[in-house]
Image (tube, rainbow, N blue to C red; front, side, top):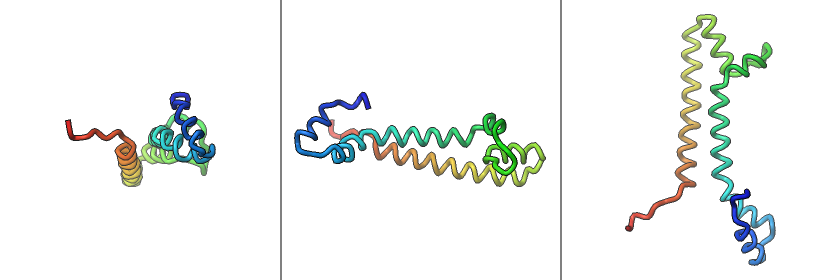
Length: 113
């Protein structure tokens, strides 16, 4: 928020807008791409996290990375393959969502010189 210029808020205030309207119409559109990118980064990396999950899990509260590790350790490869492919599909969907959101918020270049 420090990188957003105060003049934008001041201009909105001088135009008679309330703080809530300024936040919703000026600040939130500028902050939203960073929030979305941060959450997508956290989600995709949380799927890959194994070491912390193994240290902290209890029986009955396993996350998907621990279940995949246990299936591999037990030699249950068909179940492991099915769960791994479902994880790939979920991560692919998240990646496509990230690509769509990135395209929506990116700066468009005009085609005229």
